Length: 378
Image (cartoon, rainbow, N blue to C red):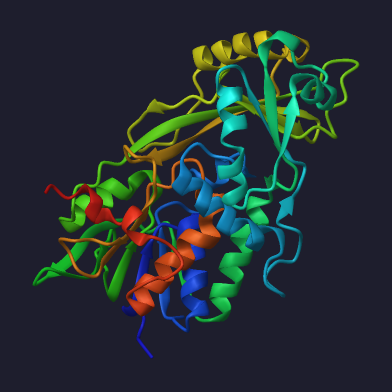
């Protein structure tokens, strides 16, 4: 049993990545885990500001595989894991113009082989499902009926609660200022208060700050870039009842919208590069998004907005998460670069991470596609 300054694993970051890896470590019998979070409470940044949706359809085959593998956990979590349902399966409706619609139809066998449960809808069928859509803007749609909104508070709380039962401890308002490295191996961290905490492993689950934590360790310079994403809410227009609509997304219009208590939620799907920060919405970005909404669904354009906020989604160039031990600094482990799908892929990504940490390998996924070593120069 370690004392308060020695742990098996220290996790830097108290969002969904940090909480979920602590949970899956506990499932492997590793409970001596300390999660450090620089903010005063968990999920202040990306996790708490996400639209939190399971949307399995993805043009990136690796991301789609991660989502498909994670979906069963979100739909039917282990007995006793959650106190309330995690997933509300309102469905996700992805809209496509030509030629993308023809490409989707041709890719149907590949989608089926990936295990994605979906239905192809004509433009008329999609408009029947969401009557505000402009007829000339879409050629067809993919409906994934069992996807939908994730209760991120319930998911995060359940990960944390289960991990705490197995010995995980958390400290909030604690910033990591230094990564301790000796003989090419990470041995712990130093906090802003000067406290030296030792561990066999340090897991970098710091979200938008993961690149900076990696630099503190002298780790491989993984090319992580945070990007701002904005969401607004507004009341449904008179005569429009959206409560039974699916989550609607259109890459060609750079928009998604969904029913929300009291009206609708909408994102202009912005991806403006940013330094790690407390992200704030940009009015011009919102205005441009509403202009695109006027093209896609003119009846939905609101007279006023109720709320607006932004968060950061952190990507590497291939947009695939980074999971694995650093090739330069042993004992330093990356769980970063989840982009916009960290919540919906957490059951799989953190299970993979826990297996790599505890067992040294993982049979459930092609881990080389996730490994930080893919960014090492040849």
